[in-house]
Image 1 (tube, rainbow, N blue to C red):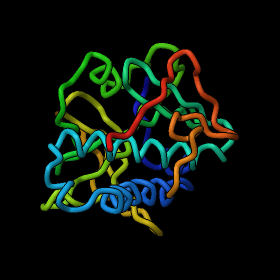
Image 2 (image 1 turned 180 degrees about the vertical axis):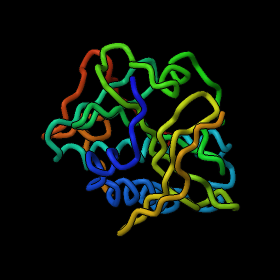
Image 3 (image 1 turned 30 degrees about the vertical axis):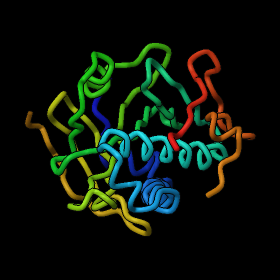
Image 4 (image 1 turned 90 degrees about the vertical axis):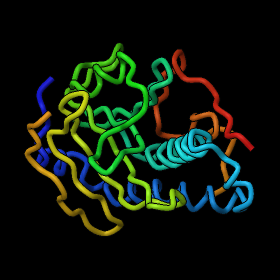
Length: 204
């Protein structure tokens, strides 16, 4: 697959940027609302990241349920939204260099190297990610990234509620949940690969 230019990404999915920003930020607000500070302090960083990830996916499912032509896939634990324009979008915690720091599976390596995933005939892979604030209790930045390898990005940009600000470009160097949404099965709109999707439960 070829690398997607930043301007082309803007044309294809730019109208979703502010909503992506909002449901990522909203996941942290919901996390703080549902778990008192004393309980949050007991959460391992892995536990917090898993809960936040589930809340982000829930928000994405709710939003994209009302967007025509969006499909959801889960492949070996990787949760992907395929958007019009043949874009595979995944959501991920990122570091200050806009890179994921967790264990890299072969599937993640393929995704970041812009290789197609099984059963998903996409042209471009993008990551919508968040960078944590210093206290790890809120989001410092929401970004959209075009990965170009295991430890490199072609470009990355900050997403804001009402605007998009370019942060990095030309990087060639190395609410109440319904049962349907909680299971990633929104009532309308979003097409689900039933063979690869399973219900998930947020730890309480």
